[in-house]
Each structure stands twice: as structure tokens, then as C-alpha cells.
Length: 68
Image 1 (spheres, rainbow, N blue to C red):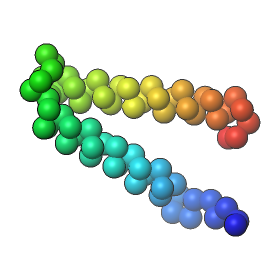
Image 2 (cartoon, helix red, strand yellow):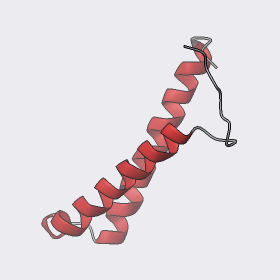
Image 3 (tube, rainbow, N blue to C red):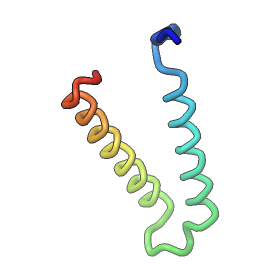
Image 4 (cartoon, helix red, strand yellow):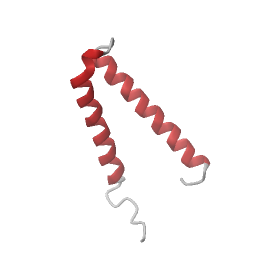
């Protein structure tokens, strides 16, 4: 199967997956946020920071292995 690249200028699968992860985190914070010692804003910031860090590490791994 050929790779069609990014016809819309971005990878649609990545955008949809990222949106799904964000919605799941938001729902989890809204539902279970009161169980943590952090407030909702701090939980959103923490989860966003973790997602950014994972994205950077994964991107560097792809570059170092020659896949990007």
C-alpha cells in the first residue's frame, strides 16, 4: 500500500488520536480530579506537560533511528 503522505497538510490520524487522548484526560480530570491533592488547573498543566515530554522523546527517537 502506498503512503499518501499528508494531503491536508497534517497527519489526520495523529490529530484524531491526540484529540482523543486529550478528551480522555479531560474527562478523567473532571470525573476523578477531586481525589488528588492538585486542583483541576494543575492537573491539566501536569498532563499537558507529560504529553509534550512524551511527544518530544518519541520525536527524537524517530529522528535518531532515521525514520524522520
